[in-house]
Image 1 (tube, one colour):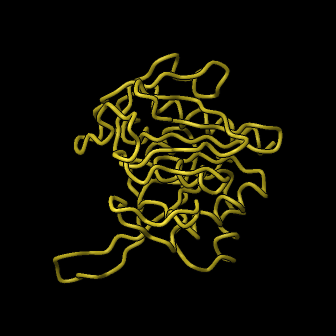
Image 2: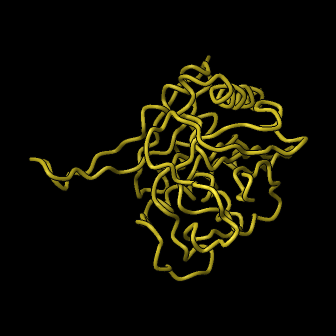
Length: 244
């Protein structure tokens, strides 16, 4: 049996047509295709506010991908919203936190991407810069705005980390974010940084947990970039190991 990978979903609200205001459950197709190429079964976990149902859905999958989306509510790291914070979705914060906590309890591997990476840090006691402009060391462009399949800046990876074995010492990534990690959550290791010092990846790999997160969007690069797809391949391989 192929492993089943749960992908956290969100809500898309239609605007400007006959169904304006209509709410749709969705996740970007890139996540689905990257999981399929890795030899696993993608299972979109739809956003909902029934925590018991959410827990049961996590029980039925073998690993979790926390996908991208809205800014994390700064309430969860002890701050008021600042002027340049983006759109919030507080109900999804609760949903994603339940996904994470249940997966940890059940010892299921977790892979966070962009928002998913940031909320992993926040759940575990870390903090964020609410906008790039609030971090005076940022020197390069971290929101390339357009063309999701184009890599625009490099990250350098730390020795002895999960992703270093896949991507090598230096890897070029795409970049679509206006927030970054400030304080790294206790127990997590910094995996990658950009040339200006922005933390681009963290991990916590122990006997009881496997959690990795990246700030960029490897799912968008995975169809045309072997190393980006290799991240999903390696994650699925880890999921299979944890099932045994």
